[in-house]
Every structure is written in C-alpha cells, then in structure tokens.
Length: 640
Ligand SMILES: Nc1ncnc2c1ncn2[C@@H]1O[C@H](COP(=O)(O)OP(=O)(O)OP(=O)(O)O)[C@@H](O)[C@H]1O
Image 1: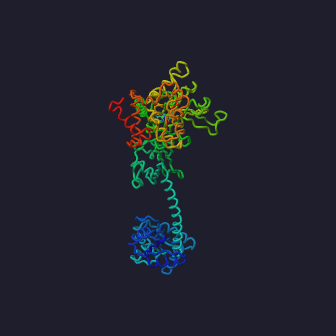
Image 2: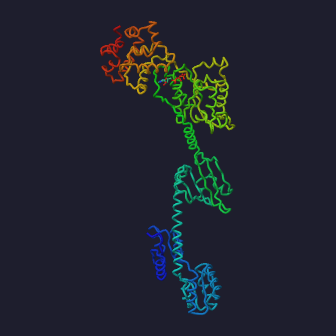
C-alpha cells in the first residue's frame, strides 16, 4: 500500500487530483467514493498500511472524527480558487455573496482589498447556520452565491444562482506536499519512539509518565512487573486509580521535583524520583522512576565484590570437611546452629585444627552465603599496615596512599562475613577500633570524616588463651566479651585420632592432582604410625605428611616405611624410643582398641572397592586370608 492515499467524494475533484498527481510525478491511489462510504474506505486503507489520507471538506472531517488514527490532510481552497469562483460568479450576476467559515471569510476580505471589489459575506460556525445565512444574503439582494457543496445545495433550494467553491490543482498539489512532509516527520517520529521504547524496555528501573491530568502516557516493562499491572491496563488510566500513594498527583500540584525519596509501593520499598515536565511555564506532566531497594542493595553488593576482586568467597563447603569422631561432630553441630544466627563467634583451638575451615562452613551455611567471605590473618599483616587494610583510606590520607584511596576489608565484607584469624595477635590500639566497628556497625576510612554503614558478621579465631592475655593486659576484656558471644572449641587431632584414617584417605584424594599421582591407600601399619604420633601441628601437619608420603611412595599403596620417611625425625624418634612397634601392635590381638580401629579401616577400604576382598587385600598390602582373619577376629571373639 502506498504511504499516501486520497479519498474524495466528487468525480471532478478526483479528476483534478489525477491531474495534480501527474503534474507532481507522484503516484497516489485515488478513491472516488460516496460521502457515506469515506470512513469505511479510510479504515481499509489504514489497515493496509497507509500513513496519511488526503481528503476534502466534509469528507475529511468525517474521517478525522472516526476511529481512523492516521493523519488526515484536508485539501485547502486557496486565493486562486476563490478568484476563479468570483470570476465565474461575475458572469452570472452583479452582486455576489459568500457563506463560509470565518477563516475563509478573512481570505475573501484580502481578495476584496487587492481587487477593490465588494462581496457580501456571512461567516458560519456550523452546518445548521447555513440556511439562515443564505436567507440573510438573499434579503440583502445578492444575485449569485459562492459556496461549497452544501451551501450551493441550499442556495439552489432557495432559487438563488450559485457557483461552487472548488479546490484547484495547485491546492491539491499543496495538500500532496503537506502529506509527504507528514510521512517524513511521522517516520522520524516512529523511529525515535522505537528507540525510546527500546531504552525503556532495557532499563531495569520502573518508568512511568503521566500528562497534566495524571493520565499515564508512557510506562515500561519494569514498572509493569513491579506493580504487576499489564501495559494495556496502565496506559490511559489515572495514576491515582493504579497507585494510591504514588505522590505523582502531589508533584502535579506542587510542580516541584522529588529525588531519591524512599516510598513503599505494593509492599515493596522503592527509591522514587519524580520530575515535573515544564514547557513554557506550564507543567505538561510528570516522569517518575522507581528502583527496588533490595535490588539496589544486591547491585551494590555485586559492585563491592567486583571492586574488591580478591575472590572473597568461601573455599570450603560442608561436604569438604571430614571427621566422624564424637568431639568433631559436636563442634560441627554447634557450627551449624551458630550459622543460623548473626552473632559474633569466637573459634578457639590449637594451630592447624581447622579454625579457618570452620569459619568458611559457618559462612556458607548462613543466610550470608551469597555475600563475601573476607579472611584476614591479623598476625600475617604487619601491624602498621593492618589498620589501613581493615579500614581503607582516602586519597592523600598518608604518604604512599594510593590515588583514589582504597576500600578496607570491613567494607568489602559488607553483607557477608569477616574472619579475623589470630585476633589475639592484634595491637591494643587496633583492638579498640575493632570494638567500635562491632558496636557501631560502621567504619570510617583513614583520613575521612564520613562514616560508612556496614552489615557484617564477625568470626574471630585464636590459638591463644585470651583470658590469660587479658590478665597480662595484652587483650582488651571489652573486645573479648564482644567477640565471645558464641564460642566453638575445635578439638585437636590428638583428641580425635579415630578421624586419622578418614582424613588420610580424604587428603589422598584431594592432593592427587597436586602431586600428579593417583594413589589407592595406606598400609594399616602406616595408618597406625599416624595414629601414634601427637600431631602438634594438627590437621595441617597431617596433610603435609600425607602429601610428602604421596610424593615419596613408589607403590600405589603407601607403606609404613614411606610414612616413616615422610614424617622425618619426629616419626623416627617415635620408633627409636621403642615406645611401640606398629607391626607388633597389629599382631597384638589383645589390644582390643587398636583392633577395632583396624577393623573400621579395613571396612572402609572394603566399602570403597564395593566389597571386593581381593582388591581390598591388595590395597591393604595383605593377603586375602589375612584379611579374612582380621575381619572375623572380633566377631567370633577368638582366636587370640
Ligand atoms: N575437618 C577437616 N577436614 C578436611 N580438612 C581439614 C579439616 N580441618 C582442617 N583441614 C585442613 O587443615 C588445614 C588447616 O586448617 P585451618 O587453616 O583451618 O586451621 P587453623 O586452625 O585455622 O590454623 P591456624 O590456627 O594456624 O590459623 C587446611 O589445609 C584444611 O584444609
């Protein structure tokens, strides 16, 4: 379908329109239809894709008033048309009269002034004034009436000569040019609207715009989602019918903008901005944007995380932490319970028992698990640096301060957990600052006077006896009571030796890629050796010796002698002291406790190989019959 279409009710106008099209070199479809069919045809051409309709007089008016939405250009009557009609009228009589709209009458006045002629004029404002106006002109004694179709019909009925006022080719050309301009502007407008809509569709803030009466004219998908009202139900409706507390009506009254206002809409906390649209000292409407506060907080969190870019995430999850002993399970059960609350936790225990591992799993089991986990080793960072690391600083806070300042670890932990390891090593001055952070839930960067609110959970850890430190005035008692709200003491490895076999097996698997070897297991004697040692360095030390054994082991199963070699002098000392002999102990069937351990270990190996005894015996480095004997020993109570 052509973008411009002409719908004209008269044959002669259709002919002149064809002539105008020929003259202008444009091809415009021309529909010559009866007056009562113009709207119907207009609707058809609109739905076929026409962008502008050209019509005339009454026909144009009818289309404009119908449901047709595309623009309608009315063919005008210009000065030449008027002059042409006057010349024709003059041929029919001396005294000329004209009835038309006030606009046309003013054109007639110009013509009178230019040609120094006199025409009787009656302006009419509506169709029902026509009869009366023609009557007045007849009474005034006119010979000929100039008018449009309806007026001429009326004059004919009253027996007065008449000349029809017709649009000439140049008026039609004028209408074609106007229609072409409208198509151009309209296409530009459609493009701009599409761009605007794409922006509105893309942004995550809810956007709504109303006119000066509060009627919604624009809205985007984000606001539809926030309010749970579909687009179609929003456009054209009064904002007060959609939202009881939008404040948009107030903005229309006060004409003053409101920025960053916290509002509750549909039970959601939002940050709203309302901006009145001013034009030539008038308010045309209001544009409002809405952001959900909790989404903003999530974004802030993501940004904080990205800015920090230190991979502040938990390394351990519950399934990566190993232990079956009662003491260990008690500590784990406490950790799970404490994870559900937000209070500060103090983890105590010797070095290497797994305090940091516990801090990680408490965080990952807590509601903060999606937030950052920031671990700070208070003993590893030089005291002079620790303060600026923890609190951050602003540019120029001290000589050597980074350009643009730096975010502190407390800020980085916002909405997550900060783990203050070895808190017992912290300087007293810093202890006081930490206490303030815990009490006020806010930090101030070095050199800054602004305070930054933070939402963090603190887990502290120490292998020192903090009460003894307090007695020696090396640790602030107020900080101790503040961090010791919940407490977990992690048992040493010596207290949970029964966990050694499973820990060894766990590290064997965990370290295989580090070591580049897939090892199967340990000889029972090797495990016994592990279980006899005191482990001052706890799990960390065990892990190290397992790793060393893996590297040293020539076989797939790590032997007693490999472990002895890996354990170095502390292990050698054990055997030299001759306090025990592992091999003997295994043979010592009177030693019921050890036998139990051995049996448990054998069963675990069996489980790993799905009960295949040949395979299990191979892993254990013993024969099938020995395996059978060991398994049946206790069950039957004998052979001793
Ligand atoms: N239950 C466990 N299961 C598996 N691995 C563990 C377990 N506990 C500790 N580990 C391992 O032991 C090593 C030491 O643990 P961690 O660093 O948590 O100890 P720590 O008590 O915080 O030590 P320190 O007091 O020296 O800081 C880590 O490599 C960790 O992977």
